[in-house]
Image (cartoon, rainbow over all chains, first blue to last red; front, side):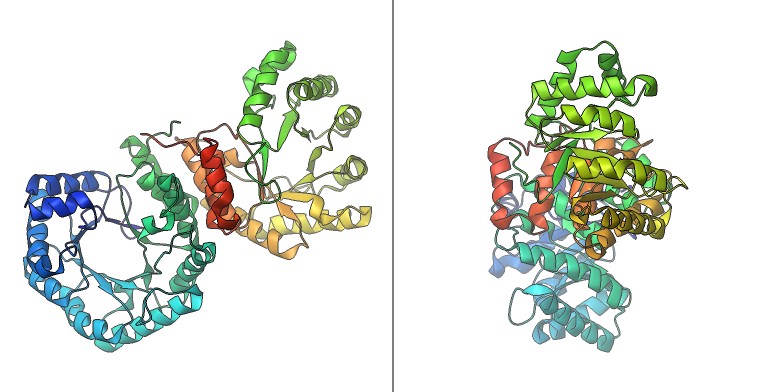
Length: 276
Length: 276
């Protein structure tokens, strides 16, 4: 069991994703042991949900996702985060899940909302909302807030509580634009404050794309986002110091009474130590 | 030379302080080689100033501080941060310094201001202002802001530019109060925004007092404070990942054009890598 309280910060393990070459090969070869190991490693590192993405080959996605769902569930007891832009793939996978899953993801695009919200409603758990509209990746704070407004209006209309939403501001690489990194931080702050209990999450590792020492940038950005109120991340919990940064950040932001989780994480050997 | 631009973030090396047992012994024994090594290590790790504190034995402080000043200056080329609550010790040390020093520190106490401001004016460089009044350690944001107001009024009256001030919100251990950690973050934000170009700094390591994995807490709090606009710290630059967190934090906060310092720091081997 994770020492991080999921209500304080939701850790979604990102490793089982067919954009990773070794995962793609394992899915193609139906290498269940490789996938099971990835699942167990992330569970041990404190993940609350495991993301499963089988989108590398769209023609086979529905079958591949079903296989991933069953393979991961055979290995660990965690709920899944079903990660697909295809309503069909999700619809096929949903009957197989054992625990209430997270749906990843809706966007502000009307067609996507129309296809996905009935599935979200039926699934009954949290949903990731990417701050994207028909125009693609957002630019600046206002673009992101407009997308959240559109998604919240659609959730309200569909009778889905906003508290089930985890909005992802869509991180662009800081090497391309430091302004966008700033916009993401400010968007997290506003979404947390202005949207009636809606949550925030993010796909973190994009921030460091194209730069060296990616873990350093990833965990430093994670700390900055926790400072802005981030309450979840799609991340690699097995990366050195990543879960440790979550635990430390929550303690420092007053989200860990008497630093009890911090001390518990240390006893569990989760905080490691940094060596050069 | 430090890869961090001092105008973006001022790194003040904290290690030469007689509250540390080995430094206290080295001062007592006039062990110049030990002090020189401490100075060189911090310079190599990117410090802009080196703090020198000889306060352990107040009866001998003036002599000890003079010896420290000369010993450190013989070893490295960096300017010093003269750290003493004694106007007499500072007055004796000032004629010996080769480069414009930092004075550490004034507080909001009227007697301290009366004694120190003439020395600050004469020294001509930056000054650390602790957010403390006659009542001792501050509590909450407002206490800290009131102390800054009092110090700014005194600086204005003495004809010392506020831009020379680095206000230190005085960090209390998070193990004792997470509210105080929050108050420090908010105080940094306000001091930076509301006091006409005044700077902020902090004695960082107090945050982790009484908890395990102190480096983890120190560097995570450093990231949170950089997010609030912190522009300096009295810290141990040789601690694993501390200078790396500064470099990464500045890049992510848009204070490093095109991530050039970040890339340069990596080439200089400063960013290290974290191993468990």
